[in-house]
Image (cartoon, rainbow over all chains, first blue to last red; front, side, top):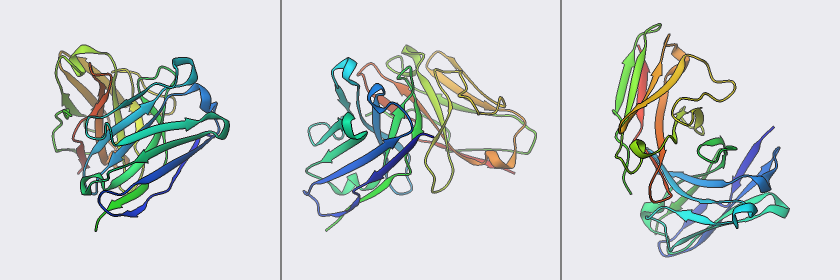
Length: 121
Length: 110
């Protein structure tokens, strides 16, 4: 069974940093691209970014709203995905989901339950 | 970051069919066959319902179908059931090598 479990959320002050983790199991993690998607309270989904796999040199893509502040990484030996968030803004407050890209890479076929990040003073 | 345009809400009675539209541009929906649809129930993670415009993942009811014409993609749910009540989001790959979601549509089953 595919499982994605996020952790690391919490309360952080504006300008601060936070690192989220996503533990994956039940599938060959190293073969899949992995994404982060967020959802502000009461709002819609917003794509955050993607890390590709070793075969594609672990290249990354980011939404314009987080580019330069957020960094996605992965450790295939630990079946884990990470999101390092720096220079956090109040508008970064959201539930952050990790999601697995399907075999074709063009959709997200499994999602974690999310972890809440609150940016507030 | 552009947001694909979806109606804020749609409704239908059990047994009816409804269609949710998702309008983008030639740089996203119109330019690629990589449109997906997700269902989200309150407090839950999204669930993939349609990928690559019109394909259903294993386990998704064949009452759900997808299509695309020009810059607009559509999700149709036939034989509406109470359990279909949820929020639905479209998503598309873009010419910037990123992904964009629609604003979401709340489906109410009357």
